[in-house]
Length: 607
Image (cartoon, rainbow, N blue to C red):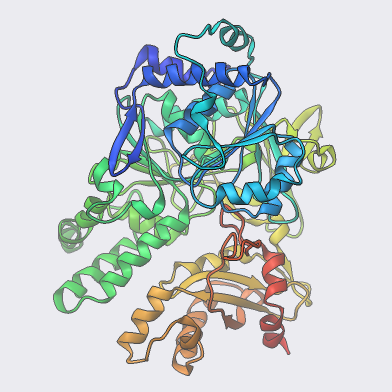
């Protein structure tokens, strides 16, 4: 396997090997508009020349932030890559304070923003970011220049672009991606062309996307998961259509319009799809309801090598025809695979989707690994409940610790995808990059085990986060993530966080699913005026206590939830007033923030 590629090489490879009429596109004024591969290459070169004409040179930084990825963002990214200018992609859901921090540390000279409130949010930070010269927009704005003003004329002399492009090396810095920041300020992960190209090549045979196949991309490219995926789609010769999660479903949704063969997603979106399906099934009556829950019961016991016989096989064929075929049609009808990443996908969700003939595969990685370390392939051995086998070229080591079970410990990783370090933060870099016998190992902060799978291959299982491990006042260690995951599998729960650090027992903060709770209330003749009122009702509290009682037997005595509190409002990355929320942009829990914000509710559970 060779991964000595510059990331922009993939666009030229597509032009030379599998040029597409519809390489990158999105919906504009209700119509899908695409660039061909050739048109994209022309746009990239004009953008590179325009950036050079503005005075930018290799090593300079340009920030970008968009809610929806668009073809023009991709062109600008490739344009920067081939002249050695680093793109600093920022999350659209962070606060002005965080924009200020990132722009100051990166010393970005320009920033290009997408539609929505982004211009105002970044402009609010501009006064305190002296290096930032100007904001451009990807749309028409009365107070800013459009990004097209950066483009050089089509008949310009591109010799300077070609000269710089020829000198870019695989080990050169490609981008700086700022992490979500579950604790403190975000850190800028420095990734080279080689770091990300390794992932593109390592996953090529595991995903096996064919030239010309359709991809629907709707995750933010500010996250390395989707960013690397777009490079991979380019490398594999796929046609990429850009959307957003709110535009996917329905008869007029983008899933039915594009009929994708593959897409990437995060578990929360699959959970929401499942919740919607479950709530629809819950409202059925008679034979339809019987069929739906019969199908669900069999699906929840599904595994990749499952084969039903006799009467069960007959029932299964009926369920596939009457129930699951509708699920597949709702996702476009041509889907060959969903790639899930960024956080752990609940096992129940994995079982149900795969049982329905919708292949979902999960991998594991982190921004510092650009991003993947393991993956459950579509064409190779896979094991639901694990995060896959180790990628060729990666070495994993489980660091023993008496706190954990035998064979369980912190995951250390070595390989070509490991970052150069954190930008301007050598002390933070030293905390996670260890020199062991002269080799660089990344301490992931995740706890896991390497175990043989059903077919004998070695798979990785993630059991928790090292920093999130709780220790009760009785000295018992508790891993919160598995407990939270089981709660979130239930249709009545939107979000969950386990509490218990230095406390006498484990408790939980639960945020109800509004749709699930409303349906339950209506079915049980309980007046509905919103979550805030419903969670005060004794019958509702009793229902959630029943759920807690059902979850507890899955865990040891010290891990069982003794008390819980229901909270009315969904946790978000940014609040309506623009202040920091309870989640990172990748929807991970900011545990310290939640603990502080709900200090009273937590105290009430213990005193």
